[in-house]
Length: 178
Image (cartoon, rainbow, N blue to C red; front, side, top):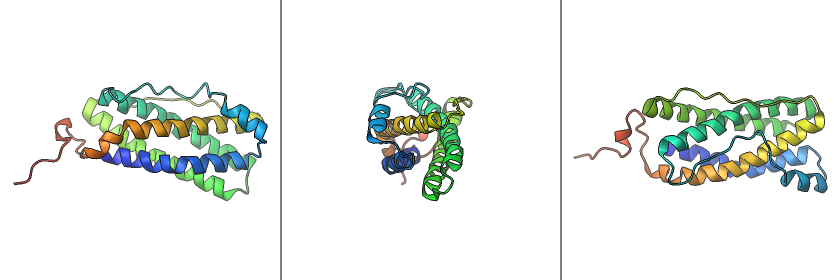
């Protein structure tokens, strides 16, 4: 569990820089950015947990959003390779995000399967043919993702104190050594 928290914190720390890089590469004017910042991505999955939610609910909700983001970042990366083919910095950051998300998903999947026997959860991401919609959807997704990561880092903060004995929930604390 501490590994999940650590990965989420690592991604959270990089999210603002990656969001700003994306926004800069789209060449949005300040009016467009202000407008987009006040609009919500209606496709972004809700994150319905609080600190007192059960561990299973937290894991399931995190998994749901990270599955969505895995697909979304993959599509955004492909779109940006088409729209901004020379911007290797942006492509690298998006690819790094996808790799980091895959690591979180792997850990979440393992914890959900071993602890609660929860199967995979499928998520879908809509694409568009319009350049403007591709740019704005990517902006909204990354803005929502940045906000989600702040919530996720708070929700998982107590996991930093738990061991990573995912094979059995009774091993949340390391055994005493005598």
